[in-house]
Image 1 (cartoon, helix red, strand yellow):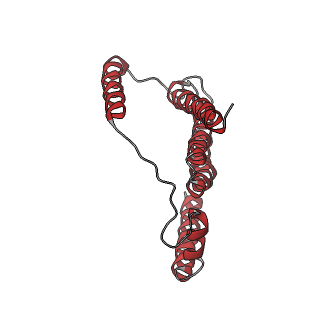
Image 2 (cartoon, one colour):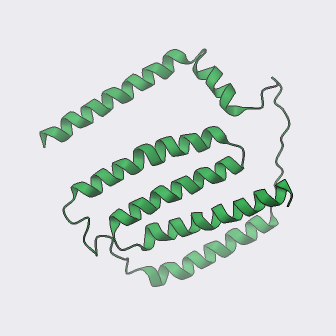
Length: 169
């Protein structure tokens, strides 16, 4: 098999896992299992980014969504008293109306993407730097170092404030 066919095979496997993870988030009856399926979904999304060559976005996806937001969801879920109940993620009674709407939107998306002509350019940028992560690192650790550090301190202060507020209740 050629490199291109391997990449296509990996893409289809990751895409199928991505769809299955999204369905698991919606359809699993226990909210804790749905949150863990969300972690799987975020990892598969970062896999798509890796296949597209966007390694910085893939790493950001894992660090921010898997590492921070999903952990926050899991802590919030675990603090509720009925998170392990079999009916902690109840189904919606509107699924009969949602099914045809989702089918129509899916059909429209398939039609639009079948009509579109995408062109992906791998040409080097005018500065000669093709690695996005390297150029972002040079910007963040060069002229934007002080604003980057200030943003980190503001986030730290917000986290400490949230902890203090949560401890008071």
